[in-house]
Image (cartoon, rainbow, N blue to C red; front, top):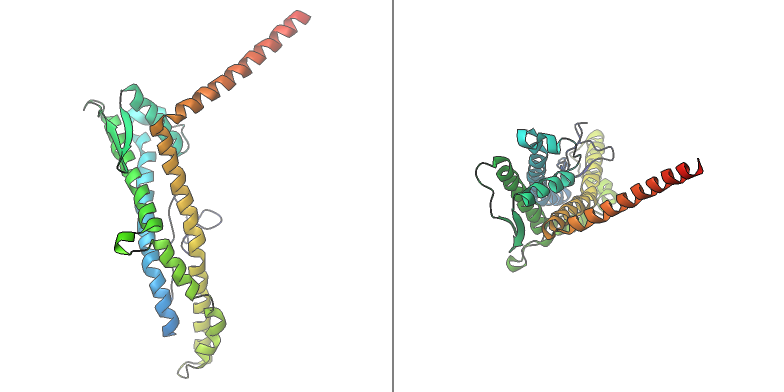
Length: 258
């Protein structure tokens, strides 16, 4: 299993994975220097990526953890996802006269709630930390730093993975030329090379899943900032009102027939 979630939502230890959590590469030294050098080159950006995912996962969990605060407990306990929790928090912030905006990429709230509304201040601090972590993931993993001629981590990883494309087919010939290894050691070296290739080849797809989830949460926060969620709520309310009206009409029809 490479850098990313397993199909059953569990990590390498068999424990349930947390959202945005990424498994670290399990690269084994095969003894074939040419191959091992490439595997280690891939591991550098891959581990940096995992550090970013850990940071994001912690920020995400801090939003979930708001329901442990007594002032948020009742409001958030039935909200299943972070997106649902954010929507609920946003409504409370608006009721308190707090407006959100995005300036130069940063998420800002103004005016800040009074010190007495500590639960709102806590929520704002955690939301801003989540936003900063989301933006950092996109910046370092996808965009990189063009001014410093620095590629995004994903591009670095993809370029490295391309180099491993023929490793499995070339492994036997490489290993067979190593006269200091026994037959068993050669078999183990080939197996390690195959496992390393499998680990590395899984990274790009799994990272893309992470990126898609990050972009989705960013768009969700942007929707809340723009107030577009209010329009959606109004539409949903209208739908519910129509359903209720139809139910009442059916009840009236039945009474008339009687």
